[in-house]
Image 1 (cartoon, helix red, strand yellow):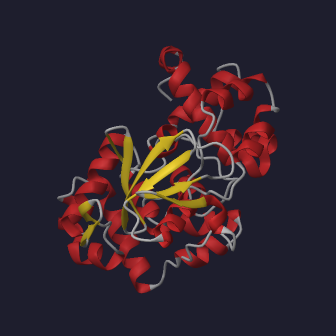
Image 2: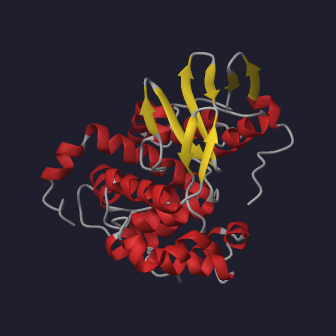
Amino acid sequence: MHYKIGPQADRYITGVEGGYLLRPQGACDLESTLCGGQAFRWKKIDGAYQGVVFGRQLRLRQRQDGLFLEGAEDVRDAVLMARYLAADVDQDAIESRLASYDDVMGRAVAASSGLRTLRQEPWETLIAFIISANNGVANISRVMDNLSEMYGDKAEGPLGSYSMFPGPDQLVDAGHEGIWACKAGFRTRGICEAARGVLEGSIDLDCISSMDYPAAKEELLKLHGIGEKVADCILLFSMGKYEAFPVDVWIERIVRRLYFDDGKVSHKRIRQWADEAFGGLAGFANQFLFNYGRKFIAGQLRKSPLAGN
């Protein structure tokens, strides 16, 4: 992938003492953005967020005047972080458009203002969401960390030593037994096949990323371990396909409660509804609804007569 965010990247970045200050277009709330289920290798340390982005260990801290970035060796690392945070996306304009849809979406947006949709590295995102199948955030993070520590390259940076996420060649070398040992469980086969496909060129993530949404999704759905929800997560969180609307059990419950009077509704119908309601902003709407549901109506959803679906 080409990790540029555009010819005016410096408009989002200011050099300051001890690091860089990032000012994305519109709001950015680090807690909901980095720890809400889009990415899985961020750790909260003394009020800051530390993770590995495009092979660099970096730390972000929320400040009133912007996002303070530590650990960058030079401005190129700041550009990588600006790309990762999709700094060129006008968050305020998106929130305003979504909030005008109806009162429900208005409340959802207000509850998580600054929740940005990340633009992650597609290879790592591919593996992360294969791991996500029937899995929770804590366990996904654990498996991703295990893979990195056991098979990723070791590096030193301004923030100390760290492990990079392994490339496809390293996971192919690890083999089924090695990946299974990282607690990947039944997802091991999908990880192995994805790694081999990327390594041998039968899976071209750059090419998939350049396709339109329907074609890109069709390609991902050919892979073992990737269904509708996983494909949509990969497309939304790494390839900028903002019309993607991932539907898991939580989104199903939330949308059913808020928009379908708790009636039974298929995942296909929910995706169709999202496309009709939000079009190219469906992925952003998805994130606001997900956070809103988990924060404010999770208890009600668990008591729903259809909550086990």
